[in-house]
Length: 215
Image (tube, rainbow, N blue to C red; front, top):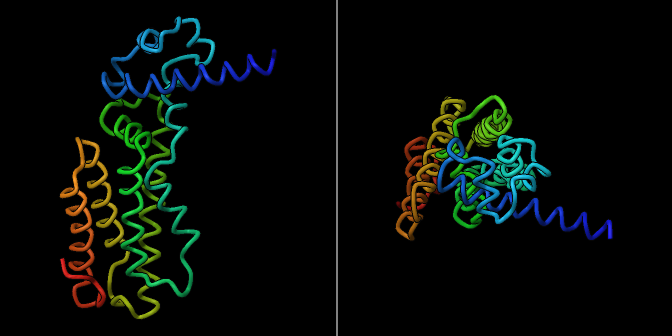
């Protein structure tokens, strides 16, 4: 009986978080009350307070259920990059991982959209923002290391400012992720996102990158 009660509690908690995603996305975090989430979930306010002390705890728990797009990219690159890896191909692939994550995983897309467009960050919600900023910085630093690795192998010009490149590339990917949360993304959008990455690589590399496909 105790095990069943624990399982039922876990199911109820997930249901509340699923509901919070929907309501936060539709109405915004600031305008959503715990009562609104409970009503939408078909539960009492007492039920939601059994699992969460306040709205900030709901929000942070919702955020913790997903891997952020840039976290996914950083972890994948850290595991796959070797001395034999082509730095240009690695940069291209690395840049696409967070965008693909956004496009392919509905929950990640919803939660990321909420985090970007539907949230005014209070002190209680600050951990989610700090996590996002840390993921972005890890992503930027990984780009810097990839460019530096290319310089060490003679693939990229030794005079290239790796930090400037990493900041610019990070800004591009951040912009594409934000754009992808503004509405439906079609095949032409995806093609445009890929094209934007290639144009950046070509523009930055200019005479250094030798294996970029035609855009």
